Image (tube, rainbow, N blue to C red; front, side):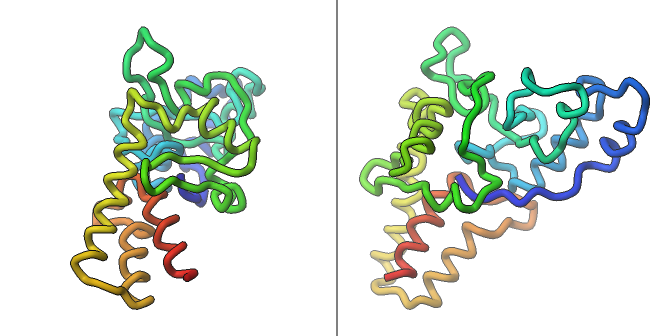
Length: 210
């Protein structure tokens, strides 16, 4: 998970909310999806898998079921998430918003202080936190170490790529570390971030602090 900086809501949503009897289900969802994708670099806000306009969900961080009509259209409460299903008949394989359901969580990618409390185990790719509340959100509510979705393995593979680069190049200067970091904090020509960038950013920042 990485920090997400929210931008302005889509113009179509701003205009639609001015109409009498406006409600979330009838607003322009395509514009919202496009805006969320751009903000997040086409990655799920929670697990950091690649998402696309045709294959994503609009997540209400504070549960939609607990909001009034106007609050449901609050763009600052919306995130783009993966579909989250591995097997529609086995909820143990669900992740992210799909696993979260109507549960309330403390952890949000919109808060840099929360992101700073997230850690990874380099040997397994496991995501965790020493903060018990955030740890519960990561592993129980969002299920971000889901075995069925191979999230740990995918994060570990990203880390392995970086470690292989180091082995080939030998000891890296701070400038070279910073250059690698930029690859994971920036978007490419199509506005996309690298999948599972969170573990790479965390690992490189640790190296830069040494």
